[in-house]
Length: 264
Ligand code: FES
Image (cartoon, rainbow, N blue to C red):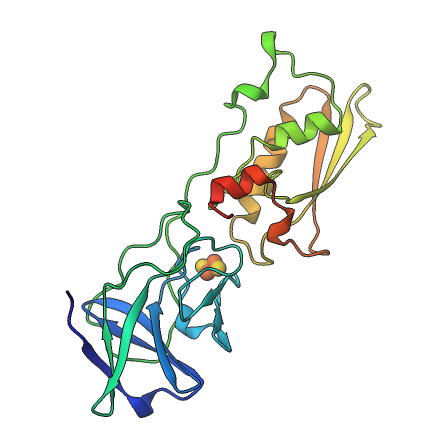
């Protein structure tokens, strides 16, 4: 079992406050709240954001990149876009210092696989104030049009209607969560209007939201939605309108999406 390593003096971390520390080459976020220290990985499980520099309210810290919240006591992911817990570590106070031992079991889980987490941070970083984190690699998007539901037998895509639009949009996946945007609850509305320029075709307007205002996957999902809908022969044009009111919340997800994300 790993040994406790002294990482800071008790007075180095205000209460409430946080500090980035390094243990065995891993960057950890050390928090001091109500007289007690807690340590979690300084890596957001959504896309590698630096948790120590996030806003700390009580025992919740918000990732500064896209706002996912974590419980600093358990590591549990409390809000989207993170669905997986971050690792927690044992902490003790002795001889005027704060000591951390790596290797404690994963915190409360949302166990579903998610986008790749960036590799371990570079070793050798001294104890320091938090700095901006590096984004991890982006997962590839889904492949709209390759899905067997994209066409019916004989290549007939069926008449264009709202249900058909939603069916096509199910081929578009959030590239970080690997769940389609319909089951995630991102599609707020579909409007079909006869095209004035192309007789027999329709203008498709989609009201779409994001799991967070700064969702890095937004441009990719918008592009995929346009490309996918554009494959239907009755579509003259596609407009995607981003709507942030009402804000997205996890209760908009279907049971299928929850199953895929391991949220129960
Ligand atoms: S990297 Fe933390 S919420 Fe996206």
